[in-house]
Length: 358
Image (cartoon, rainbow, N blue to C red; front, side, top):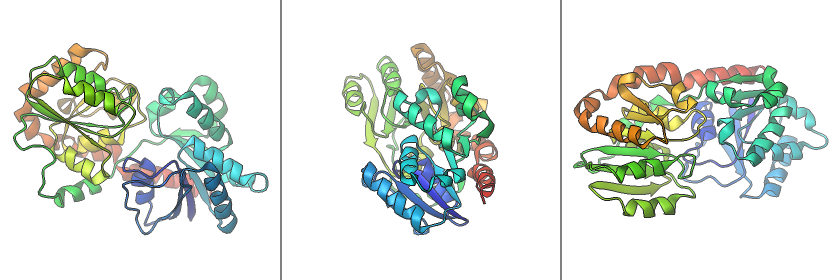
């Protein structure tokens, strides 16, 4: 089987690479074509990678050459814009290849910008099959959109690679990512933007008197404003913004953190939450449907309204008061994580979709 995978960019956080490309590297001959150059990712030698260097025209011409010179059994589209570029690359003589396309909706519909909703809708209309990243993502699609695509759409729940986490843990460098002396180690992973809502946590910490270290991993449009706000926080909270780091380094942080917090206003089905849960973090999560779909064991998670400062305040106090127990029971979520969200479950479901094209 030969597969062509289309994605905006290969980054440390890219599910299209970390879960899909790496997951199928031993069983499927894959070519990945991205719009942008890959960043902070060491590409596996078994995966062919091309990129458009940020140019839509360059990617379009590249795709024309690829489909002309290769017979792809499956084309897996991970993003609306790259899907549109692919459609244009097929026009007018190779539009029949659309019968071999699968599109994955990697987010909940309400999180997408209007532009991306339009692009995704067009690509979903012409794709042969559509998969959402979980039940919540499927249910987020408006009824009007669903009217056109329901018969060819299914939910395949996101999965994470626990073996990768085990490998990182066994090979972990001697250097600690958190200070050993930190009374409470807090981790936030995700883009620094309004949807991820990091400001809600900082506003609560500004009203608390706790000794803690907080590390943000990720980058985004709100980075500078969040840094400036954090400088004015009083008390004994050490706050660090480390930017985008490799996936393995992200996992090292998860393995050390006491608590991982996501107060996001919207998600698909977040891989970082799954990885943190398996790594042993206690979870403080907003009550959005994707977080509820993950639903970590009750003893390892507190759900809060992301707009209710009192609930966030109380959840942090609970962690401080029960920190010894939380650290002792780090392994409680491991079996649950693998059973419900192991990457092999996800890959097996996608393989059935791929096989239906052959």
